Image 1: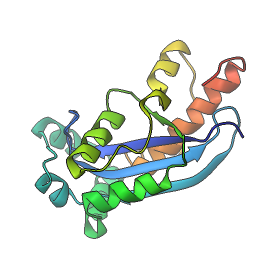
Image 2 (image 1 turned 60 degrees about the vertical axis):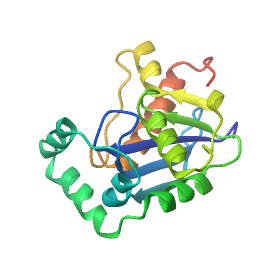
Image 3 (image 1 turned 45 degrees about the vertical axis):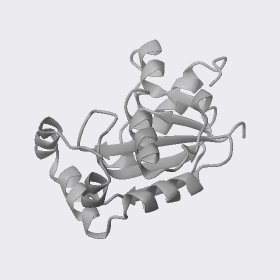
Length: 179
């Protein structure tokens, strides 16, 4: 396996970098193979996150109301045993291997939200900025690259695994491409 990679996905209640998020999902993976490794999924207390200064916006809350029953149920039930923000951030940092390449669907969404949360919590961001990778760019360069979807849409872990598998698929279509 080459350099360690992780795909991360957040479920949020805003689209801004200051967003409150209700869960972090992630999986270790190898972009140039079919290997999906250890996973991480933790619900984050919305009450605790907003008390810490993270924000919600009405348009995103309304968007959630229009999502599938399974997605809404996962969000709501996850709050029953959700971790405080700092606990979730520390656990996610501990999940990341040293020198990890960190992937997300879009580089203007998940990672800036996480970076802001780490900043608010007074914790150093646990990855290096030059190891950030973006699936949205890969999709734009490989129009039509699709794979079958498994799991619940808008479940952070299911989304992260799906996105990692899509990265792998795109690299299989382009074996000379490097991450």
